[in-house]
Amino acid sequence: MLGSLLGAHPRGVSLPESQFKVEAMRGGVIDASAKTRAHRLRHLLRSHRFTGWHQAFSKVKAEDLEEASYRQQIDLLVSAYIATIGKEDADFVVDDTPSNKNFFLTLSELYPEARFIHIIRDGRAVANSVLQRDWGPNTSLLAAYWWQYHLAHGLAAEKSLGPERVLRVRYEDVLDDPQGELAKICSWHGIEYSERMLEPVANTLDVRAAAFNPLAKRGPQPERAHAWRDTLSSRQVEVFESATGDMLSYLGYETHFGAGARSASKRELVLAGAKELIKGAINIPLYYFRRQWLKHRVASE
Image 1 (cartoon, rainbow, N blue to C red):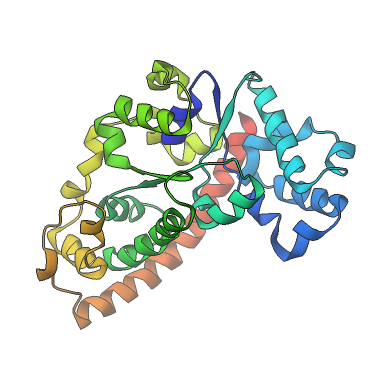
Image 2 (image 1 turned 180 degrees about the horizontal axis):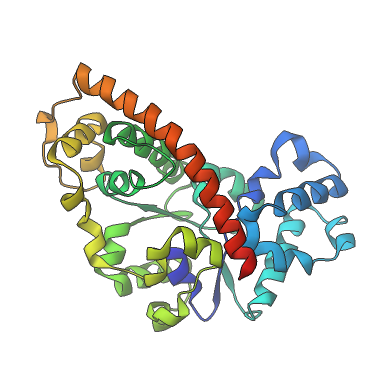
């Protein structure tokens, strides 16, 4: 959602997810010849995960890709994508690939001029969201550990790179005051604020992202901030808070149970483990068939 808002800036572009940036580096490929790197990128970009890049990739000349440094190869793809959406005069691009948070330092070395936004959200809301998916944790207990694991990368990056390179933004603040938060981000990044970022028609997503995250296309919805209170049971919230300790408080979120939260009992641990196994087994084929359906849907559009 935030990536879509920022990408709606007259001088900005929001890119489709691009996990291939880092995936193409693995296995020593980054130190290989340009042709080897180009081959690796071609292989990755054939995946339906990167449907939003297919048109742009088709416009990049093979000889250009095979004679470029790794950064130049990525830049060629980005420039081609910008051309496909007709915003060649853009001054900045927004890349909201979720796994970026795990590689802020790596991406910082690849793009020394890049800045990073670490957006955080109430862990209980994150749990409520992920429990409804066909991937990820299936219990509030595992969701608590899962949330902290992913949160740790962003917090470490904040400490390592400093506030000039990494800006922390709260999801709830964007929902409550989108104009104020967007203005803050623009000021931090040194660009002029534009009301266009709050125009729904301007906040578009590529087909695949819109199918996976339909709510993101609708822009800020204040009621989403606390929807978890009506969905999670009191016990789910208590188990979550017991497993996360003071983390919610560190981030400025008020807890319901605090230090008095009762941890999961032996019986609850057994049931949680069983649920993870059973739902996990069910979700694997659901996940596969949903991706196949999405692949055909994207291809048809």
